[in-house]
Length: 319
Image 1 (cartoon, helix red, strand yellow):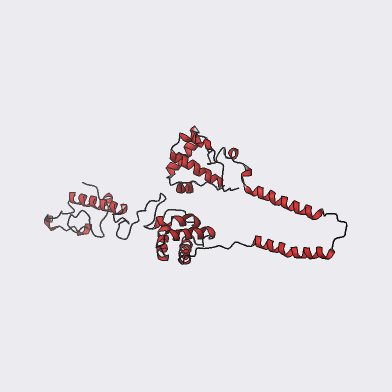
Image 2 (cartoon, rainbow, N blue to C red; image 1 turned 30 degrees about the horizontal axis):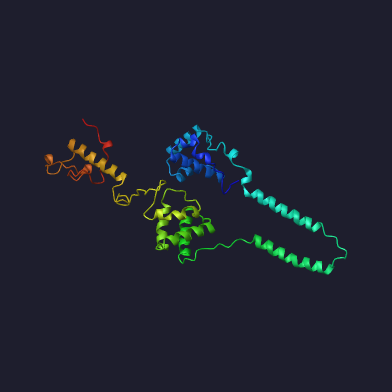
């Protein structure tokens, strides 16, 4: 059963198993405690994302934790049940308290005081009639769902629709939305007075192209929307290198794919010149031969042109 808190012992700062690890490993161990407290199924992919580490670093973390006997092969904390107690959960205490109240109420109704004069029947009946509606009202008030209070900011509704629309387009369904999401969005707008629905729409486009778990409820990532302001980010919260139509990335540098293509073309041009298929700039064509069929324009610019250009790996072997 998930719990809102767990027992954290002061011996943490003196336990040699803990203190011999790096601070990064100690932080991951504390986050693993939080994961266990929520009673969620451990998933290595999500853990690597939330801990901001690579799969290789996650495997190294697992090996260290197993060596120190913190976890088993399945990431289960070995001494969790010995350090935590079932009584820490308030659910059982509340249940016992309510049962005690019911028993006291039954006892008061069963054991009536003995009086010399007979009770006034009409008065007792009137009292019971007056109590029944009040109990019914109390029951209805208890079962009535709580009203969700949203921010009074005029941008709230429009920004909420932009977030829901982007989530629906990415996941094919509407996101869960209650007081948690409303409060997170209200705090974001209060701290960011100049952002409007158009800005949120742009941010959500970057969010949809980022490397993250898009199915998480919005209350988790709404406080972090400012991270997507300048473009998509990877799972390490760093800007991604997206290629545009000109073969350049969002940093206006040639993309890795275009760099490989240019390198292949330069190598092709060098091989063609060496084998006499291409004449460098300023040199005359030998015997008036044309090399247009090879896909080059007859000039050595370092990059061949034309639809006939091919990679150097498919050139015929030298004789």
